Image (cartoon, rainbow, N blue to C red):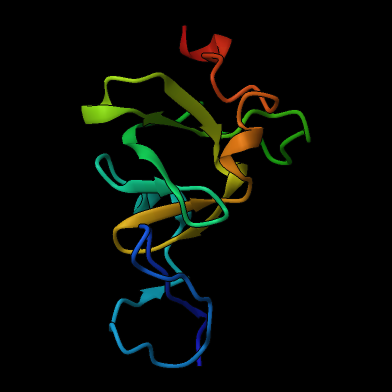
Length: 127
């Protein structure tokens, strides 16, 4: 059986990662490359399942040379926050994505750490 992930983003829904059929039927095959599955408008949640915003754009930094050095920048998710997306924008490296579901993206850190990780600062390659 392929790796299948289930989860939800929101205060009344729960998140679980299991390898069996979920009652909700939301299922995502983990064989599709991550950047191709992340689309504008998808909900973005922190590691605890709290919604932090929605995807505004996926910035593709460029093709990595073969082999890519460890310092090569990731693709970057631009996340709009606040009511109607009018809050600050987050700039999250693709390496911080823990899970991608059909309607939401889960990050590997709690939202309280975003400022110390520099997610509120626009990367120079996007300026």
